[in-house]
Length: 385
Image 1 (cartoon, helix red, strand yellow):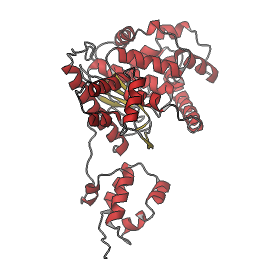
Image 2: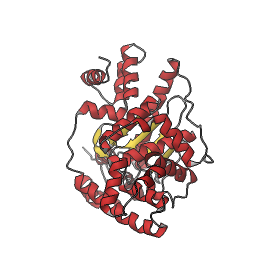
Image 3: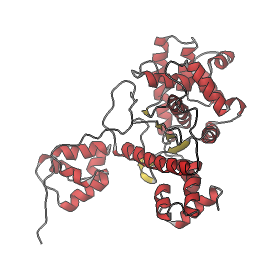
């Protein structure tokens, strides 16, 4: 039987590799004959192209195009990556956005069928609203003055619960859907907001540090207060160099929500040394990078001092992330899945299936499972069993 070999344009092969975020080592391991296909010394079989498409998560048919397609991010892109420009989106990012949009659409329709009314805070501010005023509104809505938390993990859980209580869907995930082999990259994006006055949604990149996730969540809430959908690389340190006025405003609001300047000044920071940064970061359950930005805002650091310290501290944080990356446990599946889906969304889907308002097949798809036993486990932990 004759083996069918096909021609794939070299730039399509390179596009698929970039889209999958493979480095040279990954490419050699996952597609050993890639270099030969690119330089034309070998042609892949149809089966090899199918495997390559699956491995890179590239649509099979697109590999036969004459030129790589231009894949636009389906929501406004506010990322700056420290003003270095932004690469084309990865397959992981695109699929994460599409998945959240599908879930939001379903939840919105279900909520409207149940008589939901618009949420007044969505779109209640503008860029002309002082950041301090907007921050005060968000703090009041979240009732942050009433909370007492002891660490970053507890603070994040508490903040998610308070946000969900306002009617916002919060989904925190460090992978694509339920695929544990596809870890999201915080350097590509930290989160996004899908504005809607019935079903506003915030996605937070769970591969980031807990402190960074806290800042991202509040940053995305600021986008919702503006009534704006946005993809973000939320980082307090980017506020001064960011070209986008909206992103700069949201950074300022998030920083004031989490570390109010009046409160920081009352702490009377003794210095800007590492131990003092760590103390203040623990006090406010934020990252040391946020603390640095607020010390600058409060006048404890000049702009030049801040820039120098920021890069040094950023590298220290990155080194800590790298050293801790492989030390975490797998955790409880149902706890993790509820965090990925959010409790309100999970309860809505399960209730709709149990009441016959949606099929079990659709419910499984929305919840990212194929087993009824998993559905029942989620129902039990969501308080619906």
